[in-house]
Each structure stands twice: as structure tokens, then as C-alpha cells.
Length: 192
Length: 192
DNA sequence: ACCTGAACACCGTTCAAGT
DNA sequence: ACCTGAACACCGTTCAAGT
Image 1 (tube, chains in turn purple, red, blue, orange):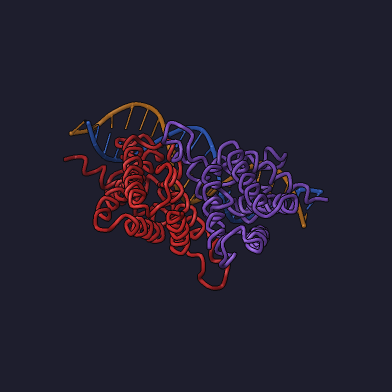
Image 2 (cartoon, chains in turn orange, red, purple, brown; image 1 turned 45 degrees about the vertical axis):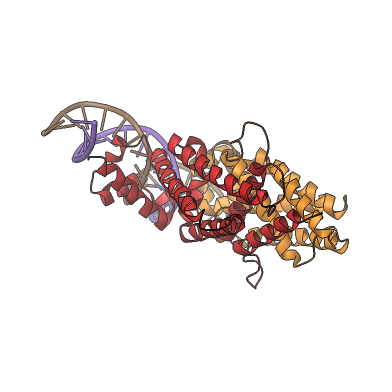
């Protein structure tokens, strides 16, 4: 089909994004990489921001799909830890995609919102499963899920910004902070 | 002194940043707002990124100074909560400054690094004071401070991106997540 | 030491055509 | 329906002068 061009445009944009951030995603170079003219993108996307939103949507769907695969292979608590680690690894490997996916989310397409809601729902269901086993403290599972998401997001953001590299030794990597939080939560679940 | 021009340039850049993000900070408009030509900024800053870094440094110093004022007016745990709330309030009121201060931190000036290190040291000292009173769990205070920072940073980031507004009701505001984490930590401190 | 006006290269976006 | 080349406005940056 002719939508092939659209997919090639997105792929080219992702390549440029990974190399130099959103500023490096010039529509002229996107067109050249995709083998079309410098303003062919305007037949597939409203503007540059719309193209970036398409990348964010595709990336978010990828994260959501991966979550679906990782769940079910592990008991709830282990699934949570595995999920968080996979998320951190993705953010480290593709920092520009991570930053973009949590940027101007407002102008995001419905597809982006759908993928994000899907990922959120999966996370909440794991939290509920862990609560049912008394492996996490009781309370609103949405709120516990939000706590986990916020910590992972913040720890990765700090690592990418160089905040966590302040100490000489490697304490306080995102992975460490995730383990710490899970530890406190698990401990709090096993109370009198 | 003639450094007055530099201060006026930074003030103009902050005004434009607050209005429309880094993209709205055009050196031409910065110059016009400051009453100089469109390339006078190059006599005070290496390039646009350097001007933005100067804003980040100034803003970080403001945060660090506020921390110093808030500490000492409260016992440790209350100081932590107050600090976190002040931080969240600042990020909500000036989202573009918040995003900038945690962006390309890498190219940041020494002044930025100094201000950030200063804020971090103050936070760590409060954590230690709380640990000494057994109001926070034992362990590396740097790591506990990193956990708090990551949560606050992540919760604010999600709120600004619209992630936390998913549920109809206002659960899971950054303030709620801060309280939740503090609650789990306090509970974990009072163990057998 | 600090500032200015002119100029350059680059980019997002639009438009009138082309198939 | 999709693509192209030319053109416009805007921006970061540099340069040769000015005081």
C-alpha cells in the first residue's frame, strides 16, 4: 500500500531522533532519508509536532505490548520488578524516545492516549494481583501504580540528567531505587 | 555596572521561557525585550544554550536558597514534607523552568552544578537528622534522599504531562504521592 | 570591553502545479 | 490522493565595524 511512505517517514524520523534529539529531526532530512521530497511529510502529518507525536504513539504501543508479554511469565511482585527493569533499560538505550514519550503528551493523538491507558491498566492489574496475595500494602491500586510509575520515571530522568552520578560509587542507580521502593512496600504489606 | 545588561537579558529570557518554552526564547526577542540589538547576547553568552543554562543555574540557586530558609523552621520529617510541597508548587507555577532545570544539565555551568550539589547536600542532611530520630529507616542517607528526589521529580513530571489526570477524581496528585511515600518510609522506620 | 547592522545558512510551512 | 520545486518568514550565528 501507499501507507508505506508514512511508515518510512516515521522510521527515518526515529533514526534522526535517536541520533540528535527532536532538533535533529528536520523535515528536510526526514524526507531525504525516506526517499521523498522535503515537504512530502505534510501529506501524512499536519506538522513536525504531529510527526513526533506519531513516534511517541508507536513507541508507547511497543512498551505496552512488551508489558503484556512480560506479565504472566512471572508472579506479580517479580513481574513488577521485571517491568520496571525493562522500562529502565529501554530509557537508557533510547533516551530521546523516553523523553519524547513523556513530553508534550497533551497534543498526543488518540492512539498515544490509548496505548498509555492500556499500559496503565496492565500495571494496575498486576498491583491488584500482588495486593490480593498480600505482597503489597492495601489501598487504591491506581494510587500505588502511580507511585511506582512516578518513581521509575523520576529515577530515569535523574539518571539521564546526570543527577544520580553525583556520588563516586554507583549507589542510587534507577534499578537500586526501584528495588528500595519495592522493598519498603513489601515490608509495609507484611505488617500486624 | 555594565553587567546590568546580562541580568536584563536573563530576565527577558525567563519571561519568554515562561510564556512559550525554550522555542519561544529567540535571541532576537530577548535582545528587544532587554533593549539591545538581536545579537548583543553573544557578548554575554556563548550561544542560546548557554543562556538557557544561565537561567537553569539562577533558578536552581533560588530553589537551594529556599531550602535553606525552610529548613530549621520545622522538625526533620515536617521539613521534608514542606520541602517537597514547595518543590511541587514551584514546578506547577513555573513548569518551563522546572523542565529546563532538569534537561540538558550536562552542558550546565559550574554554577548550576554547585547550586544542585548544595541543594542535594541540604536534603541529605535533613534525611540524616530524621534517621537520627528514627523517623526514617536506616541506611545510606544519600540513597534515601535520591529516592525522595526521584519520586518528587517523577510525580511532577507525570502531572505536567497529564499522566496523573487519568482518573476522574483527583487521586494521585504529586502531593498525595509524596505523602504516601513518606508514610511508607515512616512506617518502615518504626519496625521491630 | 561592549554593541550594532548586514549577511549566511538552515528550517518549518505554504502554494501552485504536476501525475 | 500523493508528490514536487519554488518561495516566504523566521532564527541562530558570524563578521566587519563602530564607541
